[in-house]
Image 1: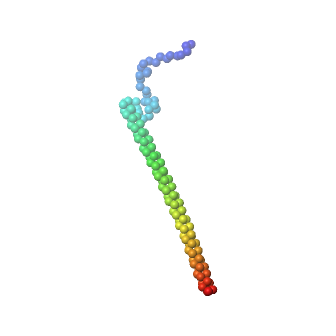
Image 2: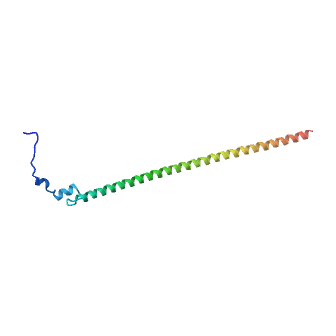
Image 3: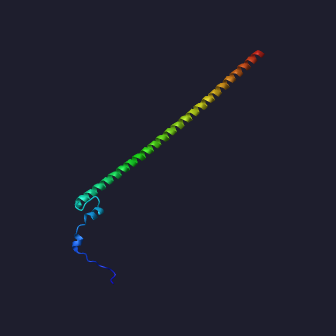
Length: 124
């Protein structure tokens, strides 16, 4: 018994077209009667549509990423503005408190000074 088996297939069997049922299963969109140039053209159009779709998806994805980044930057900027305003408000409040305290001290000092002057004048 030989190691390999050769089978004789007549040339007429090899060149015979496939039956339509088998052809439709192998290539569902094309029929056996569709010329090769049309099938290649259709494949090129599908490739081009796929490329355009991927390109558009990439563009949309980058647009979304940019929008998210800009939104995050806007939120961060608003947070910084609120923080800055809060600091300014606290500083103004401390300043007003300090000035109020200084006025009170000055007033008390004036009252004490006038009392001591009055006492001094009275004692004389």
